[in-house]
Length: 78
Figure 1: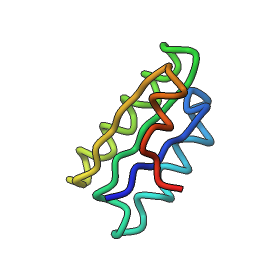
Figure 2 (figure 1 turned 30 degrees about the vertical axis):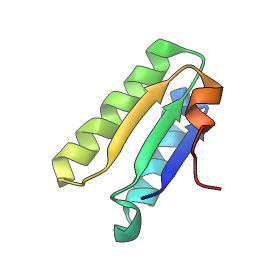
Figure 3 (figure 1 turned 90 degrees about the vertical axis):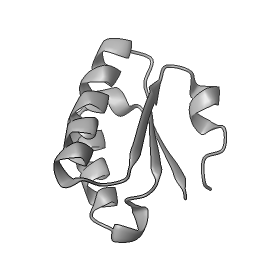
Figure 4 (figure 1 turned 135 degrees about the horizontal axis):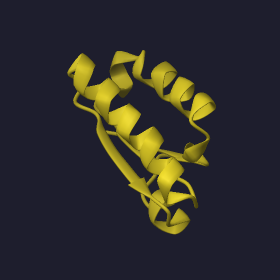
């Protein structure tokens, strides 16, 4: 499955709406979503909301979060 990385995921409104849009496609629901931001607290707020959304809908999506840009982009689908 695809690895989708969102850099700047601590922004909440835009990243969370983007995540909702991505997960509206059944073909992407089995993907790994890697959320990256330099602000760990803001990043975890978005990651937590994303995990709750995934759990609520029972999607097989994997949610990762990191403050390391290189790690976030490693293996991401281009």
